[in-house]
Structures are given as structure tokens and as C-alpha cells.
Amino acid sequence: MAVEIRELECFLVLSEELHFGRTAERLYLSQSRVSQLLQALERRIGGPLFDRTSRRVALTPLGKEFLTALRPAYAALERVVENAREYAANVKGTLRIGFQGAANDIVLTAVSEFQNRNPNCVIDVAELPLNDPFGALRRDEVDAAVVMLPVAEDDLVLGPVFSRQQQTLTVCSSHRLSTRDSIDVEELADETLIAIADPAPGYWRQAQAPTQTPAGALIHRGPDVRTLQEGLSLIAAGRGGMLVCRSTAERNRHWTGIVNVPINGLPDSLLGLIWRRGEDTPALKAFAAQLTDD
Image (cartoon, rainbow, N blue to C red; front, side, top):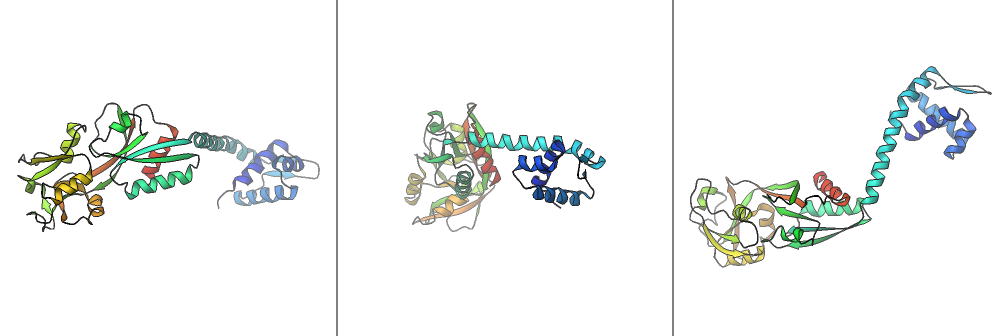
């Protein structure tokens, strides 16, 4: 049977006062309620904790043993609650979160749950340019950012990684691969992939639009874009294809004249939460934990 905290509290106070009246006063309860709580605890344990007479109240040997074990455990529980209270008190103000493209369900759920659990902290969200995943953080325009991996920046910390998804090739409906159910990554040889413009670092741009297949075959570099919408427009015009994750592909199915084909042989797409090194505030830690929970 689950032990009630109120029963333990009643036992601890009575073990100090050894008087039902004073115990009731300290706990703002009636004496009969104190007796009820104590009797309930004794039933759970299976033996008497106090010897009660009309003149005195004293701990039984069982009560003394229970008190010795309970005191440090109850003190530890109080510390846990107090630490949580202090933590919650520090999760306040405004937390600015940037994200690339449209925030997916995982991020939106984390924002909503964080807001419910931390009403003293308001989340502001901002869209980041596709071609500048780290700039807003470095300019202190946001406190953290949800970006596509990889991230290999010395001044930034990579926190929770989530949203693992298969990559797809988005092409115009007249493209030679558009009717396929799926393709192998090596079939990208001699294709043209629309590239990501500066200032995104080279390794990150290469991951989003590789210039060769895993076997080393050439993939042509197409025009540079700064946003996904620019890329979709160029795709519809037949200027090349783009690699996008499955959920992004599904969100953009309404575009006329483009098709999404799953690719086998490429690493899955991943998102990560990043922030400036040394600036993981209580609010940011709480949001990162929320992403992990979701």
C-alpha cells in the first residue's frame, strides 16, 4: 500500500512532541485526525509505533527503529522538493527559440508542455534562414536554436538530438526519377542538387547538398538558395532537386509540379537543440529536458 506523506509527517511531529494536542496544533489538525493518521500508518506497517496512555506517549521499539530510518529519508525528500521549488522559481522571463523552416510536432509539443509547466517563462519562437543556422545565436537574437545536423561549432553546445527521419529527394514531376517508389543514393550520380548559400559553414552545406555519392560519383551543384521556399520554386522550374527529410516533404506536398522520392543509403536526417557555450540557463535546461521527454 502506498504511504501517505501526511501520515509520515504526523509520525515525525508526534515523535518530537510526544503529545497529541501539541502535534495537532503544529499540523493545524484536530487531535482525532492526528489519531486517524497514526492508526493508518500503523496498519500499513503492521505494528504499534507508540505506547499511548492517559498520562504519556512514548515510542515503542518498532517506533524508534522506524524513526531512525525515516528521518534521513524524509530530510532527503524535503531537499528534493526545495531544489525543485528553487529551480522552478528561476525558470522565468523569456526564452527565445529559433528553428529552421516550419517547427515540427515534436518542437511544438515541447513548447506547449514547457509553457504549461513553467507559466512564469514565456517562449518566443523565430524562424531561422535555411542558409544561416548559427548566426542568430551568435548575434544573441535567440537563446537556443533547433537546427538540422551536423553541428561542429566550438562556441556552440549540441543538446538533445531528435526527429530521426529518412531523407527524400524532392524533384519536379517531369524528372527521370519522379515516378520511382524509392531510389538508391548512388542514383544521384550526375544529378544536380540545389545548394545552400553562404554563410552556412561548408561542412553543413555539404551535408545538406553533397557533391558526391558515398561511392565517389559526382553530383552537380545547382543554384544556391537561402530558404526552402526558394528551393521549392527552383525545383518546380526544373533547376535541380533537394534533399529534405520525410516530414518536410509531406508538409510541402501541396506544391504543384514537385514529387518526393525516398532515398536509401543516406544517413537519416536529425534535428538538434543548440545554444551558446556557457549560457545554459535554468529555463533553457528545462526546455531541453522537455524535448528529451517528448
